[in-house]
Image (cartoon, rainbow, N blue to C red; front, side, top):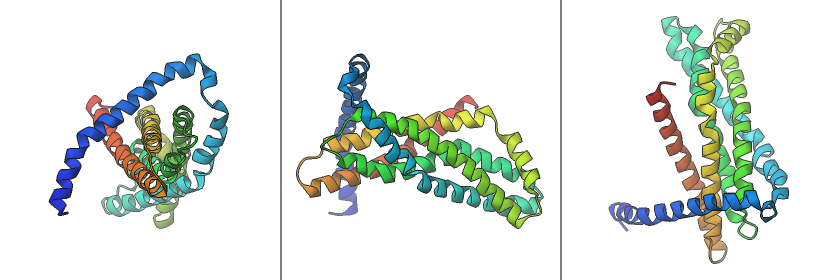
Amino acid sequence: MSPLARIGALAAEFPGKANEALDFTGRCAAALPKAATTPGSVDWRSIPKLMQGIGADALPVTSAANLLVGIIIGFLGVSQLGPFGALGYVPGLVVVAHFRELGPLVTAIVVAGRSGAGLASEIATMLVVPRCLALAVALPLLTWIGDLLALAGGLAATTGITNMTAHAYIDATVNHITAAHLIAGLVKTPVLALAIGLIACGQGLATRGGAAAVGSRTTAAVVQSIFSVIVISAVFTFFVALIGI
């Protein structure tokens, strides 16, 4: 099949896929009142184990990713702002870029790639509500920790290659950390978590057939989760810029 034919086939399938996604999301939303009124219908005891698998076990990977991103932003800030004598703006660049955008995005992408496939493959015991709740709690926590590590990475990069002292960098960082930056980045994390959970669970529940079908669905769960995370993050960025936060 030619590339154009593939694009056409994907375009033709999109309305059906979108309808399936909306239908599944609606059924999950309709199930929430039942879960609230009849707690016994939800396996709440699985949440600690899910938090361990989704949150604690992912902490080393998300922490390393955010630390490296902070170092990269610091290096870029020094290389671009240094020639203009504006090194004092590097801490602010790290805060704004990571707290608002890269922190939630990088963390969500890592979690989607790491946990999306696992959630989609658990077709025998797939319970949507506990998994989505675990993601909605774990992802913001991982993002907060990642933000702190990104600041440490920016500090290491900037003080390591310039004459700026650690004390001056920390003072500038504290001055740039505002409620607006925190809110702009962290409000989106539960939405990103729900997107990952719903997509992964939906793919798992839709699995039919043998091992090949499971592999196909897990791959689709990861790809769709990552793409959705990027789209949602872009929408939030546009909305935040529109309202001037």
